[in-house]
Image (cartoon, rainbow over all chains, first blue to last red; front, side):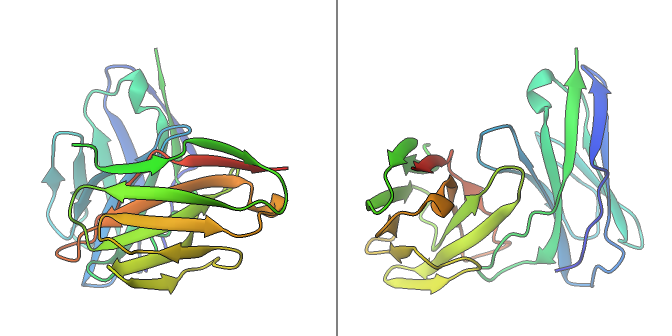
Length: 111
Length: 113
């Protein structure tokens, strides 16, 4: 799995967009970018994934640069309940393997 | 849709006691996993299963046993609990088709005194 680098913490005002960056410069052609989050004392929650193209679902948008060496998770209208640690994970799809959660970004949404 | 359900949510054990943690999923997933998370640290894989009747060791399997007698259930056993096993335990499941997106339970908080 490719190594990822994320800022340790970020703040965002409630109602504003939260943009969480992730660097993955060693990503290989068949590796996907996944985002999970862990709200305090809860189990990790899958958010979104992508390979090359930008993706959007009901939770967030994922923007992947053309060279695929970095990506940004966007929460369009952050709420207090979005306060969590956000993890960017790069890995192949398919077989059952451990998800390796790095340090992640602690996002704090401020009222 | 319950997803992944873990029981119990909390437990306190004395050193040397045994217990079983139950994980149940209703998504018809082939793959199931047990992780532990220590304070301020990431998740570490204990054991996993790629199907009914099969199990495999993860990163930190010592002191734990698992069984997958039914597709929907994955049991984690501690035969003789030790204080080092004080942790939060998370179960997850994923499909064997597509992108192996893992869905997690709410966790079991275990303290071993």
